Amino acid sequence: MSGDGNEKYPEMGAGSGADTPPIGVGRGAETAKSAVGLEAAPKSRLLTLNQLDNRTAAYRETKALIDEIHSDLGGADRLSAAERQMVQHGAVLGAYATDLEARYLKGQRIDLTALCTILNTQRRCFDAIGYQRRPRDVTPSLQGFLDNLNAEGA
Image (cartoon, rainbow, N blue to C red; front, top):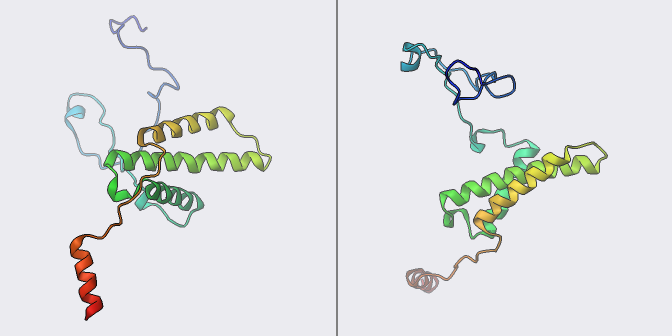
């Protein structure tokens, strides 16, 4: 602790995140924080998978895993937003784990602790959504059946 009266807050030293550079740089508009003497954090721009170059091997591997898992679960349209997020997170972790495993099999040294952490985190993502395939109901509706009959008769 610092001994300056702020004992309930631990000191922030090197490696604690206090010296981490900002994520992105935004326009330097003055904010309420900077008006009272606190430094304003620059605006950051969040990326999504849809904004990435889909030609990279990492993207293709991740997208293929997402599509396979969505299919196993009955389709993305049948999943909640939270389930879709867990699928995405699990697929990204799976692609990264596959990369580490391939590097190991090529004879390269890998961080085994990192691989185990990734696999454990991926397992927890999939625990949240389940592992069982979910059948999709493909039974045609009555209206669809009648429309199909009319089309065949015409």
